[in-house]
Amino acid sequence: QVQLVESGGGSVQAGGSLRLSCVASGYTGDTYNYYRMGWFRRVSGKEREGVAAIYIDGRTAYADSVKGRFTISRDNTKNSLHLQMNSLQPEDTAMYYCAADPYIAYWSLLQGSRYAYWGQGTQVTVSS
Image 1 (cartoon, one colour):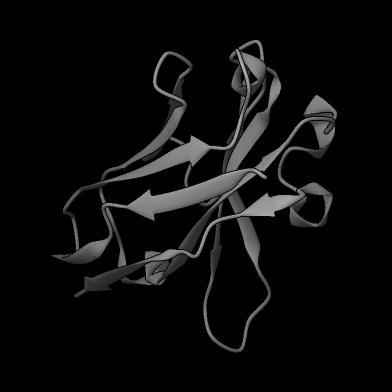
Image 2: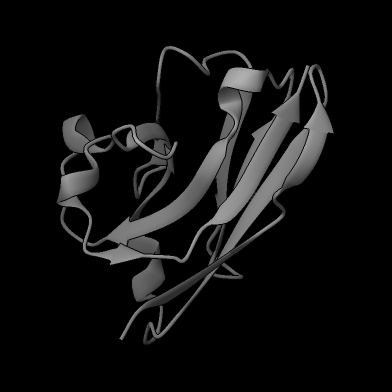
């Protein structure tokens, strides 16, 4: 059973930075390498939003709202996923979730409904 645990959330002022991490477990051998990974966020009362995702070959996808500010990366040697968030704005305030799936096509990476495994989330709060 794949398990995802996020960390790195917190409170920052506008213009600041945070780095989120997600550690994955429950994989056998090098199967993590074949999992598509993504970051999603949700604000209470709003729909979940795909923020950034990374394919098995390293190709990435970003929501327009975070392009140029956020960078997603993965370390297959440590079964980990990261999201470097710079120039944070109050509208980035949300619960951030890590997600994984072994089958998603590249063009569907930011569709949360496609992902089978989810972490519990880490809160990011940006004050103005």
